[in-house]
Image (cartoon, rainbow, N blue to C red; front, side, top):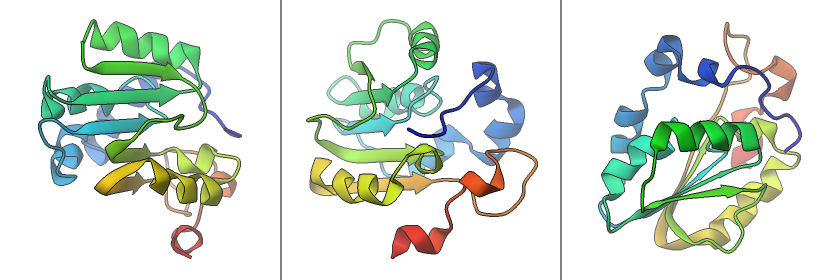
Length: 157
């Protein structure tokens, strides 16, 4: 990852972020089901990983991947011991295969987002889905600098 988040991890779970990026509501819209395997790439503090655990249930699993030991330590603290949560420090999807892959506010941090996204399809089960939510290429009060944001049409081409 070329532009990792720096700063206080608590900023990743603020009331303003919950307002613009409500994890429970968004995960429900993604159709995550009991028994699913979900990869949360760039999981950070578990903002999406932890609520996804409830949706996948004990028959499913959530694989939370992040390159930052600090973020993963915070995720462990927040999640506690969960038998269906796999926490992985890394910068790739390894050999994991999933029903759903979450790429939430992470593509702008990758060195080559187009190549990563192309390879992500190899990590999906049949009928699997990738969900991308990232910052629009326009100035906002929150989020990464404008020059780090990726225009939507660049990802869709």
